[in-house]
Length: 506
Image 1 (cartoon, rainbow, N blue to C red):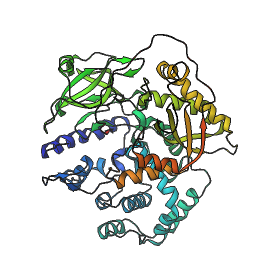
Image 2: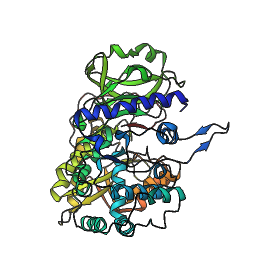
Image 3: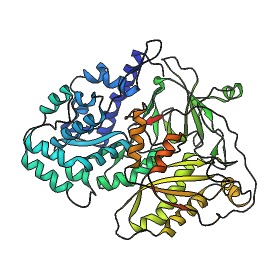
């Protein structure tokens, strides 16, 4: 995406609004530090010689971050050198080490996405013996080879056998429930994105944090920063972002749904003449309506389709407050069926809550695949990575029930394809090994994805990724019978091709 220096200043302005808002709801934040896991990605050059890098890398490398004046609200446990380290392992290790050394000073914790923060906790789960050893000896692990990182971390780490004993005791316990509040006892909230599909991580975050508030502070994308959450302690399902009108010129394309499915398979793409005539200005949006966000930016984007579907939840003065609904795309399709990420998320959640929770098991991560080659007709495949805290084995029949419940939860077009048209085969759930989705993220990063902006894809199509997922399958289950379906009015969705872009809401 094109950007200009002035855009960083504009985004810094929006950042400057976050903590004054938070302080109205959580007093005393200036008396401690934030433990945030922030990362950069190596830069590249376009054929024309222009610098190309993720938007957050641009910000972290800019003077707005590196030369920021002291501010108690932006006082982090991670030295700048650890954030700016291009090696993701060294960056994660050193940031975690600094966070542990300053554990009593930490008042808030977070990352960009909920998945990124959980990845940090999983990293701690794997490497806590090494981290405790460094704290006991006051020496940084030799695996950390970046000289600037070693020097910066060396200023933080001092020999502290008592703290090392404490970390070993807490991390050595069988249960990691509440590990955040156990290791960082003064933490007041977790600052991560848990709206949209990130909501699936809420049970895991609640488990690790003992139910601390989950805060989504702002809504932004690589193309533009949009607005802030003026009620940050609101439940994630009720979060509404207030647009800042000066960030860009905002327009809204009304979204029409057929049977709960948005009327386009994938965006953004160019606006048609008819769609341009349908655009609504910021001051003219209607309460309760859903719109696709269209922006014209200072950096040169003209009527750019962001690809997010938003619902108008209210107004602050005349500025609309918007719920993030979903990415305007279709995750899965075999025939006439069009299943978007919201419908898939709801179906998966329904199956997990009804069948897995009684066994004290929960879904760590998932993705999907429209398999049109191995069976005829094609069928939906769900890859599930599970964590089971209970001791009772889960019978195969339970996973088969999960398959059926997912199918029962999908729309009538899908169920008609299964029952009447026979155009869709039985849904399949593949249970994968623990750590599979970490491997998937590592693979994506190796191909150039940004660790800060990485989201687990809700659908995989790229052959090497499908091969990776299939190579780690330990069990596979199919729906035992057709879902219920009653003949009725058949609804069709128009499909428009386009490129999916990655968004993030802070």
